[in-house]
Image (cartoon, rainbow, N blue to C red; front, side, top):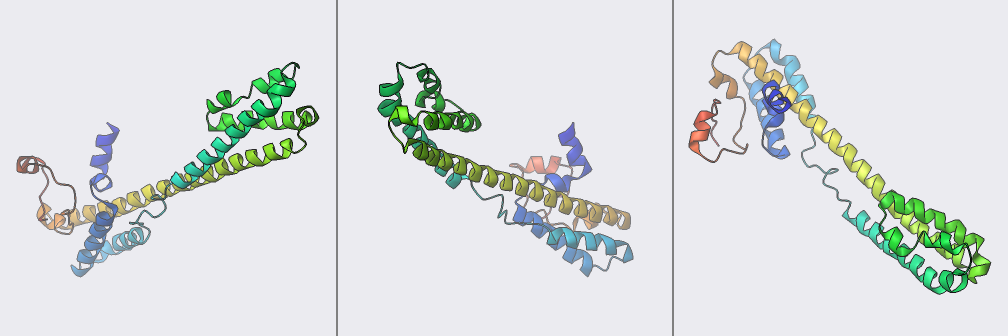
Length: 233
């Protein structure tokens, strides 16, 4: 029911057309309306329509941004970190600590186990390895190991933060862009409603709107059955 309700409440909100063409439809309607000298009742409607057009981003600059670069960066940092953990396990932890009780703690965070974690769990579990490297630096026989581990982990954490911030920004942009479509659709619906009060003929009402760039039905019969006047392309 919600989908049908949305259509009948305001079919402009569900028009199958590109953002570029939707803005062009709104601009054309505003131009035709002002040229028609429709009277004072349309003044506030034209103001709203002009405002909605001014706030409409037809290019989708923000939402078209991709996180692919940040994803690749995270993937590279993840691979580097897991290789570091694996190399450290083979070169230092297993040879020097395998007979000690602390070895069981290191075994919780092998490359294989960490590789199966999702992003958040990978960061959380990996962070637990850092104090182990620090506390047992002497036993591991590498005074620089803790600093190297911290550096590799920070690259991973930074890459994850960057990607999360980018995804968050794009999500907010898409919400904003969805809102600007609704604002323009609302202004067009109000314009159409006022036209219906002024004109008895649907043809006169629809003459202010150019639906030629909307996706068309595949057969002429479907066009005839749609119940709406069919504008010229």
